[in-house]
Length: 511
Ligand SMILES: [Zn+2]
Image 1 (cartoon, rainbow, N blue to C red):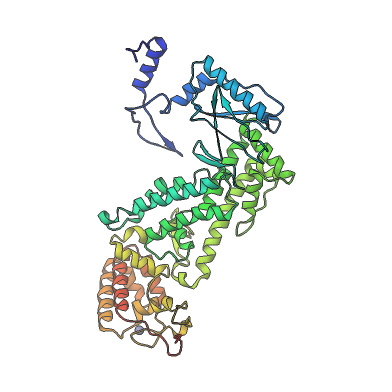
Image 2: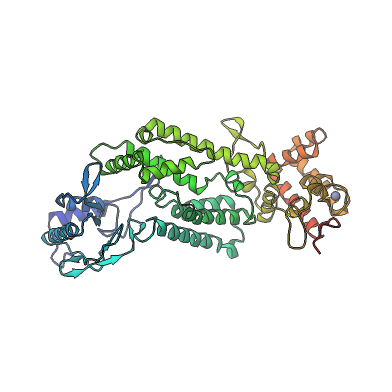
């Protein structure tokens, strides 16, 4: 640039700034170590928005009665660094504003690309579609466009519909990429898998989630499916397994609730802004629409809260009260956890997960969502998946396999799902692991396991004779010291059962 004649004090100052610049990122109260960017263009690094804002500060379009009004504020322009929007409710005014922008840029020696500029019509189309010009060049009319990472469409009832499908598709692709490592690492460990989920998949699923409110079940289902797909694969359980366990066992939040919480966090921020802020004007405008019975962002938030398993009512005035918003955030967390816990407590297949106490500040408490110990303490993937399947009701023992009808067999009542070896008791988890003595190898495995388990955790030996086999099984699951050995034993026992066909009672097959 020096060779091209670019020089001067400002240029030198810029060189000095960029030569000494270091970066750091912050998330919550955590900061990363400082780092330097060895490549960085004015338009592409983190300093440029501020420099651009200084440069752009004197660009102001004249107000007009046909401008978009937000709570009495005329809004006809918005800028995110060098991504600019100009808007109007009347085309002639819109064209005049675009021309004014073109003239301003000419004066400031800024080139605007007509080819890269686009325009959209929201609402009913006029009988004759006008032509927008930037100088002498025609600007293309679009029905869908991405602005600051958010896809907008003007031809669908929900202007964010494309955003949902594109983000869900990207999340699925990222998910496939994460599991594509399988042929090199064989199985993705849970801890690392959840980290990958948060950095590579969650970011797509929450993108725009605080702006596009999930009131359209058809759209948000794409995001939910992408989340469920990843977690089912990570845990190694069937894609038709129940959904609550995906969250109770990993500590993650269902994506719809996560976006709702982000929305309420955004609302909290907007409420704290001063009256001069356009964002606050937009909030007040949206709340007014809600109060007068019209649809909008605030109305959608209220609708979403009212569709929770235990509906939460949010009145227009609540949108402007920080303590009320905080109370609603706490209530949402409470409602979602209660709903997940309800599933765990009332579905038969999750009986081993009930009353699972966790340590919270040196006390044992019922924690609905947490990454459970067995997911990270069992290092052998096959053993971990066997134990996970056992706990989540996703295993091959008859008590689960014969529960539902299949093509050539009716559903079998629980009391008739008998053990394929002894034909004497229901083939459930306790029977297979601790009761059945009709298979020699099974008994040998159990003896060997109990010896090892008592060595790992002597407390187990002390309670073995005192507890019922069911309660002892629960103690085995909760024992951090013996959980790896127990997972291996579960894997071995299920393998033995898998070698034989389940016992189908006579008369329950469909001829
Ligand atoms: Zn048996």
